[in-house]
Length: 504
Image 1 (spheres, rainbow, N blue to C red):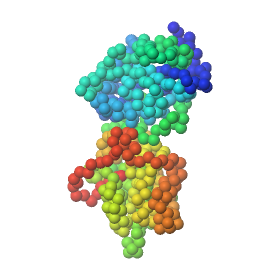
Image 2: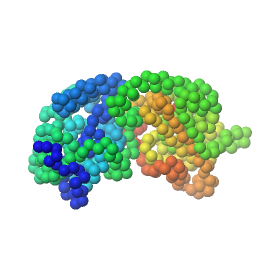
Image 3: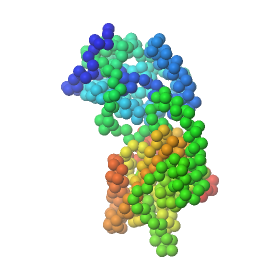
Image 4: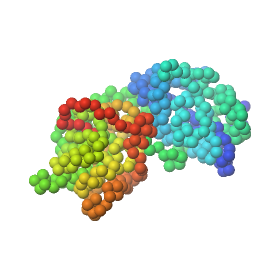
């Protein structure tokens, strides 16, 4: 059977397919990219770190030789073994749920998705390990059935080997499809992109080939059934072999540079930090007109800066933009972040009366910063603003925070938060943009009869409008349930006395 036997995907009608079943391959079919290496590399780095990524990268030439000159199955088995051996199954599932969807969704083939999305029943048949792809396919693409390679496990850890019948390529794909649809009617549509997909495509009433066209633009996120609001992981870019090598080579250099940048921020007087950051490659852009510092002699209450939350460094860059340290209130930080902080912050107790009393007292001493979302969000969305701050003062200044990172994300839900500032400053040239908006008019505050929720929602809309972001009602609990499988509650530990802590 020749690949030219089947027409291309452009010839497949997508109208009137509501009662039809589609069976699609993944790499090169649903996704534009034909290589699964970047996704194995992501799992390797997120679970095993830089050494695991290096091991997978070193094994990739052997995997490539076997894939192209021996068999697809042999090459994929090498990648599976190099990536998964020794990993906890729960960690693999976590990465598949929290990290990979962002990268998969940015590479969806428009023609394949046009057909796949209009069918009533959707099945994906892939050589990738099912544990790695099932979360994305079912939750974000609406797949009803995912048939993939099954990995071997022992006492909750992956052995690196695959279970029978082996990697799902060629005849194994056809056999898996026959078994899955044994008692059902023949699938209407089969989508594939290579010779080894032909056996399963021949079992469908219609078969279509997805030609390799790297220049095709991926579909936009707004066309997905479910938008990706939350995602985790440290890597910003998809780790192709070249990008993976550059990342491995940069990390030792980047870590030393991060230490130098953190030391400059922690040890220098705040008026000099802005210039030190610029000298060290950290770009800080300030927009708007920030209010002057409050004079204690006047007895006036301090200004409460209401910041959108991008990383735990938001209060640091707010202080950098103002040229003076601004205390901040926070939910939880790591002990390491407490040690290296250049500003004073105070933990919230999650008891409303206690926290309100503490914030009022801090405002009597001067200006204060708060991130009412309660947690960070990487995408262009704002989470729900907690309304408590609006009841405590009328001196409210919204601040729109946005940052840019080229290699590493400075936030995590699954990992150790103590490394957040290091990963942010490990970027070659990280950037922050701090936009001070107009102080909230008195007629829009609680003193003029507005409810605290009305004030909080108004400020959320103002910041979202400035950043061209979308307002949501998601909370900290929603984020941590999606990414880490918990509600984000941090158990309070005994603390050493300290007058400096960090972040939000």
